[in-house]
Image 1 (cartoon, rainbow, N blue to C red):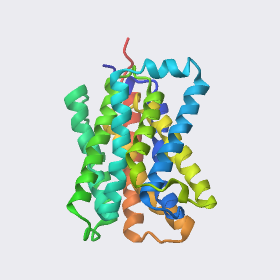
Image 2 (tube, one colour; image 1 turned 30 degrees about the horizontal axis):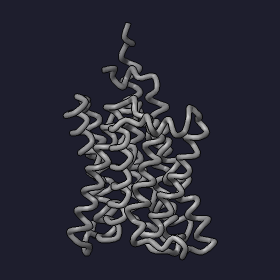
Image 3 (cartoon, rainbow, N blue to C red; image 1 turned 180 degrees about the vertical axis):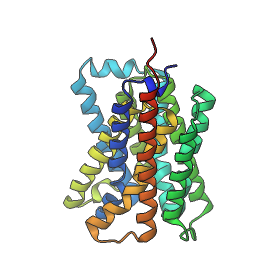
Length: 295
């Protein structure tokens, strides 16, 4: 397997993953702006996102129905798996504290690193280990002292999300020939169907409908387009590391939009995460320049 230092698409993949994490970080502020219950929000987020992705499949051509008929069992598995993960994410944040959910989900890079080594035999460099420690420490500092409350069920859902996301990354890396856009349409449909019994789809206001459109098309649909394209090009552990940009930036958007100050810990911890990721990227770029290309 060609190492990341020799991957010509590495920079492009990193940019895509960063863009996906940037869109994911908008979830907190959009959740605050939408005045509806979490089940209805999840239903419309998944439904609108799924329709956005379906439109993307149609625009690409190659036969809409033919692409779904040709979707491999791994593609169907990935779509259904990600749809279930979306629901687990909502359950985590509604049954435990935000702080506990964040710190538990932040172990995802550690799980992804182990899964990448176990399944793909991707080696973990020393500077990657340092980045793992620094980013986890940054998230931990952000939420330190806010662990009270919540439930064991919510904590379990957060741990489930961390593990399921590691599986998603490794699956995309392992099966590079999956037609990912149709699989992501399946993810949207799965998430919507799972929460439909508890949702109230027609209770949303006109203002909420606009926010939900942004939620579904941008934070869900476009982010998955970027993520699935970028994850093919970037080592497993680095995909998970870049995903922590979401945790670092989410409090800032809430602060800017509704004036909810994140506090000193959130700012310092978020800065640690971003600086660690920046230094990791710079070190990796320098190492790539020092290694001669393969003949």
